[in-house]
Length: 223
Ligand code: CA
Image (cartoon, rainbow, N blue to C red; front, side):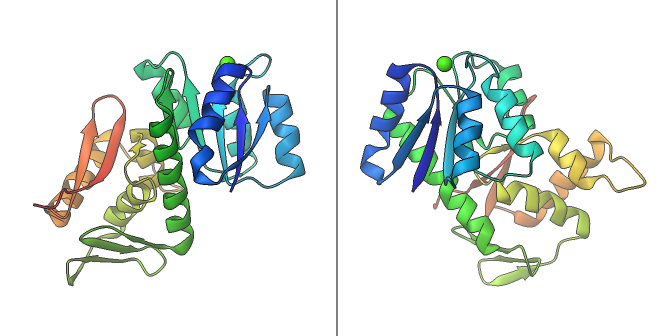
């Protein structure tokens, strides 16, 4: 697996590379966003870890640029300051996950593995959870051994959440998903669809509301 580490601080970059050493990653280091863009133009990567604090173009602007060009490269953002506003901004700009510094190398490695699993799951178009199977291409939801019918709007919400299972999906993202060409959805519409979806999922999965951040779909622990 090819990893791009975008970090100007040698100590942190080394810690990132060390944290992932056991996972068969081959890492390329870029000390600036400009160097990262050059590396991305030259070769394919499986994952990028991007520090927010970079000289020149900052890490969040780099993420925005990548998303602006339609790149779906899974991206984990590292941030020294991790205020609510920073996290919301990182997610809204298209980061897939974030970790605040200082971090435990084992946690970083686990987050990277989870990101890749999700990416590959999304490519396969079928996402399997302990009790739920979501067939994105066929628009089919199975819970335990039964099919569950969803309305088109409930699907839009489930699809956003399941593609980022275990991660926060901002309310804005759900609003965009629910908005049609002719009409904007309201914040209330998001809450309504989430509550309807929750009723249909029952105890097979949990949609957690994170105040000010958005929602997160989580596996229900086996009882
Ligand atoms: Ca830095």
